[in-house]
Length: 181
Image: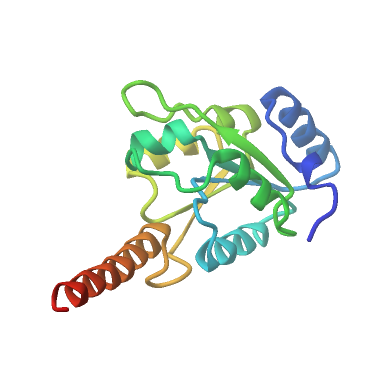
């Protein structure tokens, strides 16, 4: 576990830009990715480690609670944004964590983080963005690398659904057992 993880959470994009500029002076390649990171799991960690392998500095954007409610549903996220940022800050492969809250009222991303830091490489998955969105991201990033899913049958949604089904089945079994007595 990293020490001083609170220093790796940078909420001010202007300060993050200064940090990125300093890394560039040192010749470092800056990699960026954005996600909800709700209920951190093995697929997330494999993805983040693979993203870090693409460069020297990995900046991870964490979608805000508000944004996730807009593009997933009202029941998400399960884990609040502050805790998701803190969990990511403890990962050795993650250098900096920031909050991303740039979805407009029409539900469209504004790419504020990417426009501010202009990463050398933006990492995404083959199911996170439309082709049009990826083209918009390319305008503000030197390269876009698309990864495949890093863990088959493991996503936060899958975990929630399996857990709910398991518990609902158990509850129904208990209710049916009580009815027969």
